[in-house]
Length: 274
Image (cartoon, rainbow, N blue to C red; front, side, top):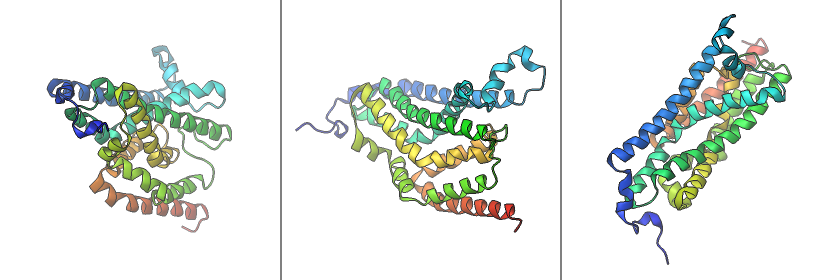
């Protein structure tokens, strides 16, 4: 019977490609990707607030990306916004899994190409989420339920989304996905696939687990604003911490309580009770 590749049967020399400068170069590339995505978000956010007359300096394209324009013509722009936002916010949350993949290189498993394939597969799952989120945003905009900055206008919609997200935090589905996100080594042992294509498949599976974990928190952009950098930064920090085993277990339930209470208070405010 062939031993599992993670049990050390392969030559450690193969894993040496991750050592020293090679590993550093991979991390530099990863952080350049994340910082680049955040840079695009900041550019888009600034472009959405450019004053009249700035078209002469090429602002039209970036303003069009940030605009909530219903219909088929607006879909590529809105999808692009969600895709960049997902990459910027969600890639950092998977850093422990990416680091674990590199650590497994010392046991002869994985490769540099596999590292990038893993990330590509992971982000591909979030591109699927971005398709659905863009379609939802355009649908809400068509119904007149969104402000230009992407915040929900429909009475009670923000309250309902906050409560829904809080309840999902307490659900078995959330717990199941979080358990995999918090134990990347266990995930790789259970789902290991050889080669670059195998790494991409693992990345896709990891991304789907991550979507299952964080989709509701991401949709809170319709409460905080789809181009609100402060919201995006705070949400990213929360999701990064939630996936850490020790810190995350202390965060999930209190976060659920905060979201539910915030939603109920918003609902009471609408009824003039408070």
